Amino acid sequence: MDYNILKKEIIDNIAIITISRPKALNALNTLFFNEMDSMIKELSNNKTVKAIIITGEGKAFVAGADIAEMVDKNSQEGSEFSRLGQNTFRSFGELDIPVIAAINGFALGGGLELAMGCDFRIASTKAKFGQPEVNLGLIPGYAGTQRLSRLVGMGDALYLLMTADMIGAEDALRIGLVQKVFEPEELLDECIKIAKNIASKGPNAIKKVKSVVRNGLEMGQIIGEELEAKEFGTLFGENSEGKEGMTAFLEKRKPEW
Ligand code: DAK
Image 1 (spheres, rainbow, N blue to C red):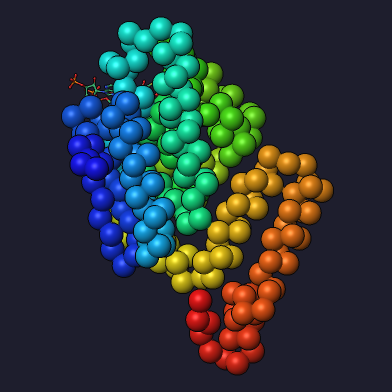
Image 2: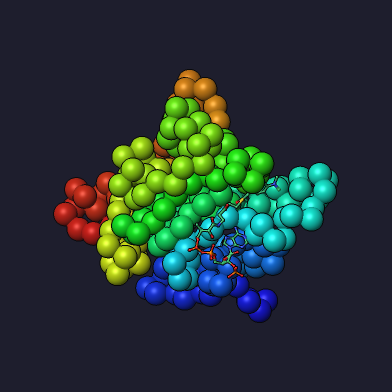
């Protein structure tokens, strides 16, 4: 597929997807979602890719869903547009490899929802975060109400959703919305370092960590622990990654995955 909005670069088995529609602050339209779905499919079929970083070009990460495209939608079309985004962002969580948001600037509305669909978020000191939908008489439509409250807790989520306040990177770090903050010129290199560090671990263990945490959050504690025990066991099979990792430790050598 030809991509108009997305750019892809692969550095040392780490794929960097840049959302590139800077004149509209990378606002998310239908073409974006179609391209992102294809890109995710393409990358998930490429077994040499060990992690994905998503970032934005220019002064925004993503300033939200494309208001110009949304304004004429009716209720049914609004729900369809909502489901399109929900499915795309959910697909990040279903991949076996980590998906990291490198938030370079504005992450507003649908842009913050995109970032929250990623496994974790690394921000530049210039990043700004908010859910300004209520300014437009809307609520988040790409799972933002659900993900924000799970990530930062109900109080901070309702504060951000009701006030539409924009917060900076330090506040985002404080409430756990992002995990690390770097100077803008260091952001991408630091994200690549983090991705390469994860890529050096047991790939099957990384895949299981991701699925057990993500699926476990949707279950009660006891059922989640049962899932953990089951997946833990799968890492102990003969010739398994776990056996190799533990043997390598005891033999004082690097594991070969
Ligand atoms: N959509 C379309 N165009 C946008 C945009 C957006 N979200 N954000 C910015 N732009 C465009 C501006 O219109 C402007 O275009 P021109 O006038 O140059 O043609 C260009 O990008 C540059 O923006 P500004 O001139 O405004 O730049 P500033 O630096 O002055 O301000 C800003 C930056 C980020 C503070 C400002 O642009 C802004 O407030 N933008 C809107 C932010 C916003 O409200 N975002 C949330 C969008 S609502 C749902 C599905 C999804 C959602 C809701 C429901 N369902 C289907 C139910 C999600 C909703 C949203 O994400």
